[in-house]
Amino acid sequence: MTKEREIIELDGEHKACKNCGQFFVTKVWNKIYCKRSCGYEYRKKKRKKAERRENRWNKIDYPRLTFILSFLGFVGAIGFYLGVLKELYSPASDKQKIELLQTENAKLQDTIYYLSKEKEADE
Image 1 (spheres, rainbow, N blue to C red):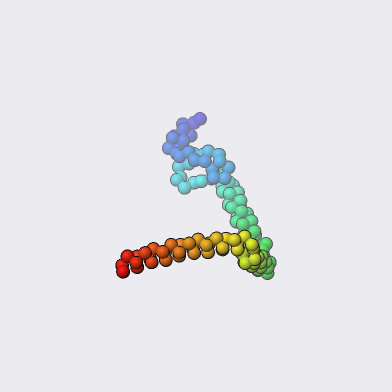
Image 2: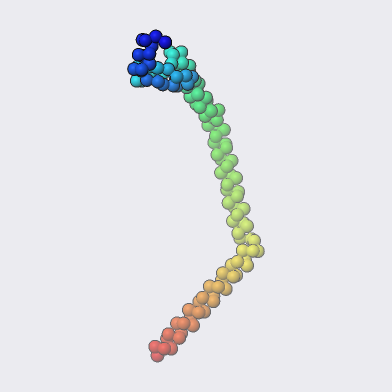
């Protein structure tokens, strides 16, 4: 290695190329590519990636999207109505309602009993 090269390496900053990953020495703080061609390649890759991302959404057009959304809404409505029908006509729910009413009835009877005791005590 020559003297000039050693001085440049001592004064410069070691960086990794953003495109190929190869290490290089630079005195410029904002240099991110080892060669100009690496910069071109990196920007080219970036453009292609952006185009692919953009094209992904161009595949679904408006009529197809509205059909999919309306179909999902229709399926959801059917599910809702089936759930309502199941709740109305299932025998298990009747048993649960009867048990709930019996517990509420027992609570009301207890309340009436305690209120009548309080009234008798006041008189």
